[in-house]
Image (tube, rainbow, N blue to C red; front, side, top):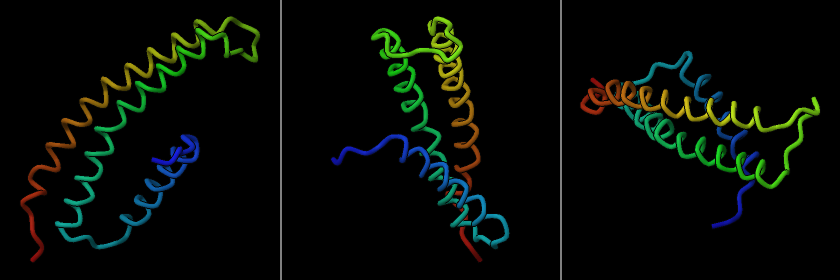
Length: 114
């Protein structure tokens, strides 16, 4: 697998969602297309926790290496702790989002266009 730049990949993912928002704004979508989009969004939401957990791990590692400095000249430990706590909290909220999105996507799976 080629080495991918995480920054570029995250920017491309954000851009893809922006494009999806525009694409779904004024188009008439049949139920199967809505289902397909919802299923893809379920996958996206289910993959985000891993990304966030890995970012928290990376941040803690950089702190342990002494590779972080704050432009305020403060010790980065509190900011790293606050950030990783917020990332962990986000992961917990994403579990709720995933459950709700599954509830929305489940009946869509059985819908067909007329």
